[in-house]
Image 1: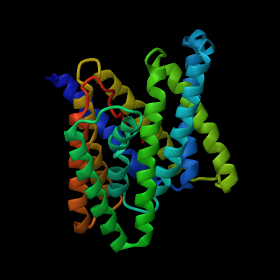
Image 2 (image 1 turned 90 degrees about the vertical axis):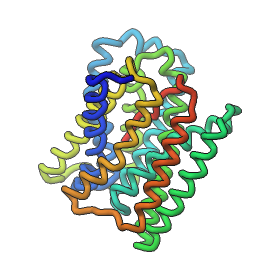
Image 3 (image 1 turned 135 degrees about the vertical axis):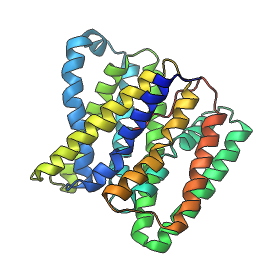
Image 4 (image 1 turned 120 degrees about the horizontal axis):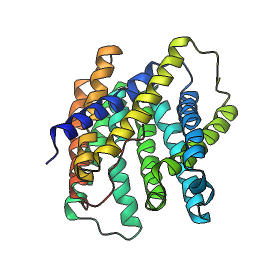
Length: 296
């Protein structure tokens, strides 16, 4: 059983990641630019630290590890390039719930690779899919724009799962800091190119926008990840993954209080089914499986 310190650590981590969606939805900057600056700011911190403390490991990466880290960075860029824009099309609650389907996509990718999926996990996948259908149907009834956001968020969940799968082999024998440095830097460069091609402004924002970008980077991207990785030393990956699901109601609450966003009543059954299905998928996995850490 987790200790009080573990529970407190996870609670702070959940609060940190729960601010991610609302903060980015409230940031007065292009969605793709938000995605770029989050990763660029992270890289600006990680690169000097890694060069100072992990230089030998960084430059001695095998060709395979380097390629997999770059592929993971590509999928992470795809995640941010779809999920962040989804927040401008649909509600924070819907976007956060649908991007949290990462464990479902990971299970399907594992099955495609030949892994056996427990019967209970298939039940969870079915419930999650039904929940997603109900939720997107409710959003479609609200507006076609919301449906676009839902589809982008689902794509963000799928690419997040691919990112985790691509990087899992590297993380087995490469430190988290070194792997994350290569991955985030790759992601930032790819998003920079995407912004330039799309014509997204990379500057000229109000001071409040820069403050929110710093807050989301420090809060969700550093504090949230650090706390969840720390608690994994004493708490099972399954329990950590289940705890992370509280990000969805947490983000919805923050969005309701600070953005005035309240999901319509018709969306609540879909949200509940989706979260229940994801929880079943997580609970049915091998206890040794790495947790679905948030990448928002």
